[in-house]
Image (cartoon, rainbow, N blue to C red; front, side):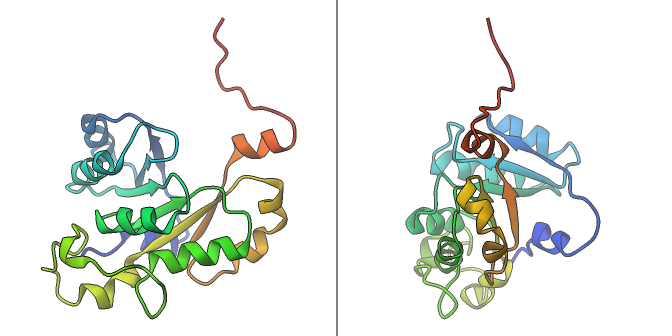
Length: 191
């Protein structure tokens, strides 16, 4: 079973460098994977990825020493299970506003008894179709859960969200957060 290099690296003091990948061509993933970044985020929320495209990107990044992070489109438990089953080990889940929502993400990502993730490892790329010995007993330790806070409510609850057992990190979404405070962030203006 592959150890989650990104999760292990979070425990250290060194900064981790990476980039957002929104281009659906797997050649871009290969280029990014070979460029020396610590991580590459496959954006399943705003980019034009479906589950199969995300799987292809995970496969394209697999030969490289770059950790893939998959941003889910939302906190749907079925989507979380499917992303993990295709081989994602690190997820970024957007629009988490409360500790209860964060707890639900953790439960969705982990196998029982720690969570409620459905067991379908015989059909999962993550377990190499049940060829990884003791996969079901070891998988929870390799899951890294990052949540995205991007609303006023989330900022008010950030300490409670961070305290949820199983949350490995928080990403503050600057664009949605600035819009919440009445300032739409504009990166590029075309005329």
